[in-house]
Image (cartoon, rainbow, N blue to C red; front, side, top):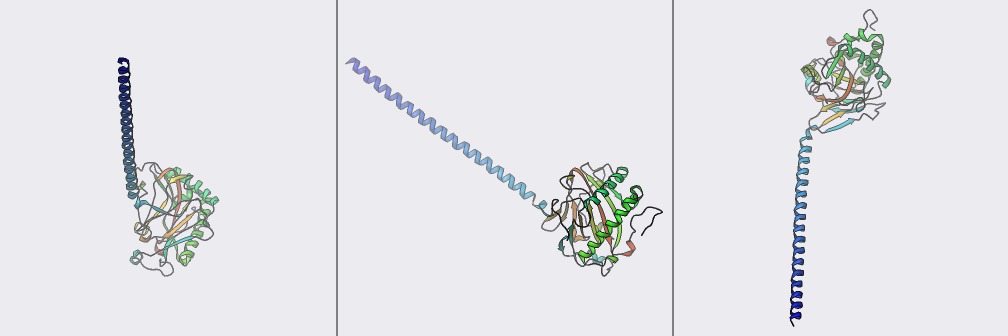
Length: 302
């Protein structure tokens, strides 16, 4: 009997121990589940914060969102890609010259006027000229007239030919009489890199209006001598419109041209790597502000 009671007691104790083990396992499982739920909740909170931060970041960049008018890899030829915009009132403050003063305003891009080979030659000449006269800051310019002597007859001949073709495409695009358009100053090579600006004149990235900066300008053109994404990064040309920014990616031999008034407020993006070369060639309708093509002293001016 005593043995039977002991066995019953042991069986009862075993049952109690088994129950305790089951309760412990259940508690541990419940604790693990609660821990998992807290971990999931924490991950969801972190994800929500990240999404909110990204949304705020994207929202803050809305003013800088750009529409690319022409990409570097595109070939716009033979016809220019033209974007018409309404003319500003800027031209009302100047004497009007029928057949030249902007009536149809806009911006256009073409790769069919200057060859990449011509752009390469002009770039080499620009590199040589700017090596002697460049700034230590982020932007350097070389006036084409003062630099003609150092760059020689080859530059004068190529430039004169290229300038004539640019003038012709501007006249055709905007419906002008090319004989009423005159080259005007400043006309220059520009070299832009990521070097820190030394003076205010090196800060090329500020928004500006050519007609306001240079009263004689009626039509502005830029001939790019290097490739965006290959020779440099950053440095895109940005038209700053009311609801959006629209950009042109430079390509060697590409010509971008536009009417020079407030309708084409613009800036150049900061160059972040490499070197960007271009030539600015501008035209006026006012004969009083006309200048001749660069020439070698003692040579023919044509």
